[in-house]
Amino acid sequence: MTALLDVRNVSKVYAHADGLVDALADVSLDVPEGEFVTITGPSGSGKSTLLLTLGGLIRPTAGEMYFRGEALHTKSEGELAAFRRQHVGFVMQNFALVPYLTAVQNVMIPLALQKVGTADQKDRARSLLASVGLDERRNHLPRELSIGQQQRVAIARAFANDPDLILADEPTGNLDPSLSEDILGLLEVLNQEKGTTIIMVTHSPAAARRGTVRVHLEAGRIAEPETAALA
Image (cartoon, rainbow, N blue to C red):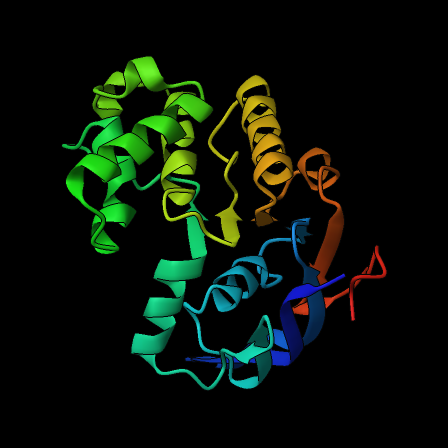
């Protein structure tokens, strides 16, 4: 199975008033193409740090990362930004929707950054909103949508640039159990139908069980390898 991401001995150290903090310590793993990876662990275990490192938003202190064999750890900030625009979509716990833009306009944002024509942006955004069950809500502002609908818009936006990788940080953290099931089911369907690799941080054991590859962190280290995909 082809590895989309190959992470080798990655560490991240932060300077703190009380001394150095090891957010990640010698983490190694393979992320195969098309898998649904879940990352769990207690608060402060390094889950979000690992996720943002995989997305090129945090530069590791030590170690190597490769995307389809191409080194990420040696790229400049500008090269990493281009990598994210082309290959990565993000789904955050707080949705991060622009409040004065409609649902369709929010989904169009990544396409505008890719300099896609306006008509094509709208067509693509409408198609994505339809895929998450929101075509009839496309002209609504975020405040006119329910919490679950807002997260669906955020998911549609994450898929706008047809990414190879979706990084989701506690995407159901603000949702009740019923809505959480809806969003997790939607991510599973998109993963299976589009073949997009998804890496999701979650505090929920039930959500973690959705993963085809599961990673558990303790104090910045992989504590419980659960599949052969872990290095």
